[in-house]
Amino acid sequence: MNRFLSHATQRIDAKGRVSVPSPFRSVMAALDIRELYCFQDFVYPAISAGGPELLERFEKQIAEADPFSPEANEMSLLIHGGGVFMKLDAEGRLTVTDFIRDFTGITDEVTFVGRADHFQLWSPSAFAQTQEAARRARRQRGLAAP
Image 1 (cartoon, rainbow, N blue to C red):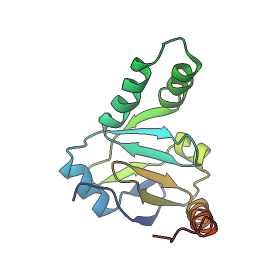
Image 2 (image 1 turned 135 degrees about the vertical axis):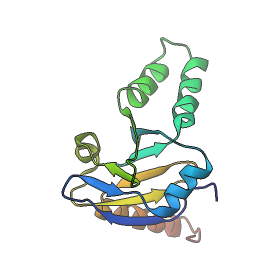
Image 3 (image 1 turned 90 degrees about the horizontal axis):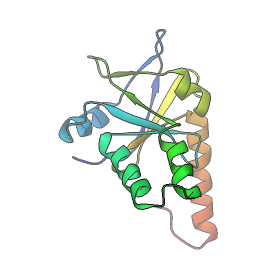
C-alpha cells in the first residue's frame, strides 16, 4: 500500500497528542516518510500533510514561475508561511499544535482524510459537511458519487 486512502476519526489525548491511524503510518513507512511537511490547505479548513517531496513539488512550481509574479509570491506565502515540519513520536502520535487547531477548528477529535499522496487533518464536523457538499455538487452535475 502506497496511497493514503479512507478516513478515520481519533481522539486527542490530555497532552494534545493524537494517534495517526495505523494504515496511514503503514503508508508513511512504505514511502519512508520520517518527517511530515504540513501546510494549511489552500481551499479547505484542513492541514495537509505529506513527505518532504510535497514541499518540493510546490517549490518546483515557484522556481518555474517569475519570482516577482503574484502567483509565485502567493504560493510562497501559502506553502512557506503556512507550513511547518512535524514528526510523529515513538508511539505514532502527532502533537495537535495551535498551528493546527487555529486553522482547522479542531478541538478534541481529528479526522484523518486520505488524499492519495498525502493526508489531511480535519475537524470531524467540517469534514462531514464538506464531503456531503461534494456529493451534493456531483449529484447536481449529474455525476455519480464514488
